[in-house]
Amino acid sequence: MGIIAGSALTGRILLLGYERIAFKKAGMEKNSIISTFLLFFIPTFLLLPILFYYSWDFIVLLYAFPSSVIYTAAFLIYINVLSNYEVSLIVPFYNFNIFFLLILSILFLEDTFNTLKIIGIFMLFLGTTFLNKEARLLDSLKAVYNNRGCQLMILVSMLMAIGRVIDTFLIRTFNPGEYSIALYFLISFDIFIILLFTKKVKDIIPTFKSRYKEFLIGSGTNAFSYLFLLIVLTEMEVSVAEPLSMLSIILSIIFSYLFFEEKIKDRLIGGIIMSIGAVLLIIQLNN
Image (tube, one colour):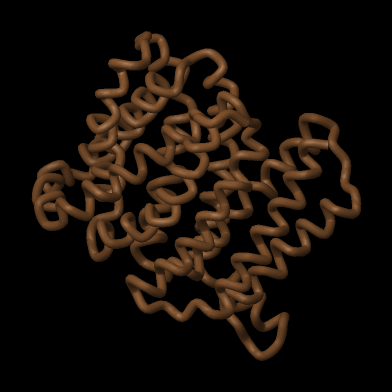
């Protein structure tokens, strides 16, 4: 891995760690669809200056459309969950995108199970028992998997896994700059259509004005953490880049204590266990 990719990966981990906090601060008690729109519409403009470095081909809009639909659904759910549930409880479930990547590799690449894969999957599920600690293991599992936010976050992780596979394919054809701008524009457009049908367009500006600092910070962390991922993917497989990015989850859990005073002792342990499980799965994806 080169210096540029290594620096981009480090930047992504740091930005992702705070991104979830920024999203929650921006979206709390706000319409989640409007919040999601702002957190993708603003980055479209924040990323425009990078076109002085990267080239642009309008055909990228056509190629990026399928992934934009997947990401639109994922982030509408994601922002809603972050805005309404404890960050330290639901964020570790993002790790499940590695589980879905494994399933995809078995279905389409004729991959097989082995001991380390089984251990990795077990650690993913074991880690969840620490997120909502009960007296017995079974009660703890039920407490987590009966939580609506946790269920929705697992759905988000599945959609994100599909999106990352598409990203990896398209980044071979288009440069990170043009692809990221096209994707953010299309996601914003998709959500704007939803706002038109729900007659919420008039609420966009008031929502932004009420928390413009939070939306600007959230948009900045969102835009550049994703751009950094695309840069990393030019030199590293997604099945390696995404697990390393999961180190940001530990930061998010710590930040949830610092900013929202959430109880994180057991959840931090769970996040670490789930991250180790994800890394074990990823080692096998590359063997």
